[in-house]
Length: 146
Image (cartoon, rainbow, N blue to C red; front, side):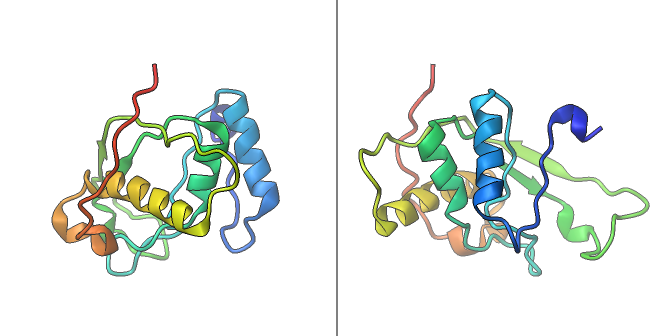
């Protein structure tokens, strides 16, 4: 089933240039790419700081980002698939693209864009799950992709 959807899982502890190449190839083929920017589930079930890979891919590809937040996983054991199956909820925000940036963006610009992406995800969550993005009010303007 996973192959039918062109799923390319990778180990977050060794994810590097090869993983980025695979993700970029999927984007170039107009395939959807699902990224969990935090890299793992949070033990306290709140958002943790995201990683810059999502920003790198979005800038390089100019692919639209669809912010999706999933709630209900806090009832799952961290170490196995829940049985019996539990209910989860996905909240989906409007798609947006990052602004075009000429040249290589600075680390500060990349961090600011990451905060914007993660803020859009946080907007889809109840306040108690927003974690480090709970106090963010600057989400940046949406850039509709037509």
